[in-house]
Image (cartoon, rainbow, N blue to C red; front, side, top):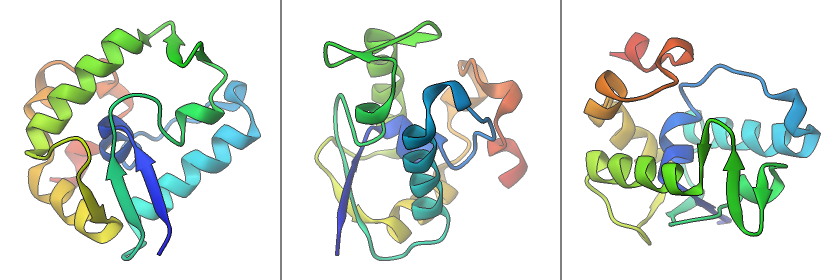
Length: 131
């Protein structure tokens, strides 16, 4: 079994965000699609929740000096979101589960209070359609 390392918001949000980001490049789009496929349909891939730069961040042009430098949320903001999401899922950094187990957990816990009250991407997120 292969293993993927992902930030909490990538594990949780990639499934629900229906936005294309062609300006981030084809490698980013490919990894982003792999994550969506992994969380939506795969059962057996090991996924480890990590703090900081993950497999998607590594191919993102917004990553500079090992930190997210996106205009909509830099590394400090992203770490706050990740902390809120990890708390909402009731898991810890370093936790490893299969992609199927992550999907079932996300289905059970979503939408998080964060989704309802604080997420800036609410207008393009489908998390509320899945409840």
